[in-house]
Image 1 (cartoon, one colour):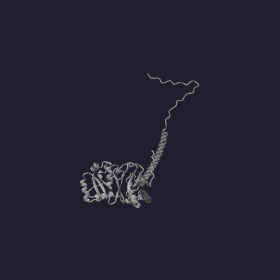
Image 2 (cartoon, rainbow, N blue to C red):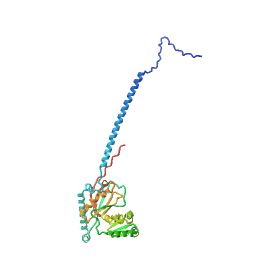
Image 3 (tube, rainbow, N blue to C red):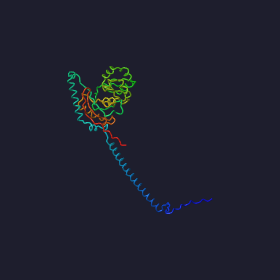
Image 4 (cartoon, one colour):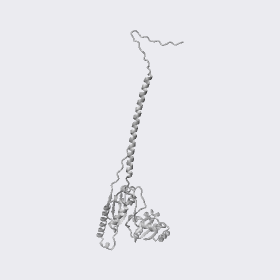
Length: 335
């Protein structure tokens, strides 16, 4: 059976007919206008984004260039080198060193005269002058072997008696010393004999007072501070290392005799034997000025590591000759 169409409601008397709303479809012209407007807005936003990205890129490049310039500027500031002789006079004032040397020697001589005038007339009074170095920070690496620092005016004369401690067997090394006719070497001792005969404190002190200078084979240098003990360490007379070869013994011995030793400390202070009270103020000043750059070169930041320098004897007040402010810490980088 065929379905009947739905009955339409007839309006009552006095009632107006209701019109049904028809869906209106946009024309092609309206569609094209709306699409062009949307494309214009998208292009405007894209152009705005591109300009913002360009400005950001320019800012980033300017900041990176300024950072690179600051880095290169910081790299160009070079500290004084360890070997250059002229840089010592730029950092350390020679007049101040000369005044301190004169005052220290005058004080030591006056004190010795007042203490015992009779013994001074019989014996020459001689004491060691130390250069005390105070650092800003503890060194990164401690070195057990000392550095040899040459001095223009040696702490020992040509008549000094030298004792050399070598690795066993001793007969071969003695034959080398005799064949090359090395001067001032009075005794050659093996490391095993040091272990056996110089274990007691009195024996070590007697050995210390017997000879003027102690040298050792470079291969046994790390063993000797423990074997020789406090008398040698306290008096700063630990044996200086040399390389015992077939043709260079004379040069090695004379170089060690005319040098002082620098130990890299485990703390912030170290003392170096820099002169004698029997020397003149000019000789003491020359020793300080000629060796200070080599001494500073063995620390982590060279001259920037040194806080103060002063000279003293074993029983005198330290006279300052140099002081510096601690380095300014770098500001933290912003995240």
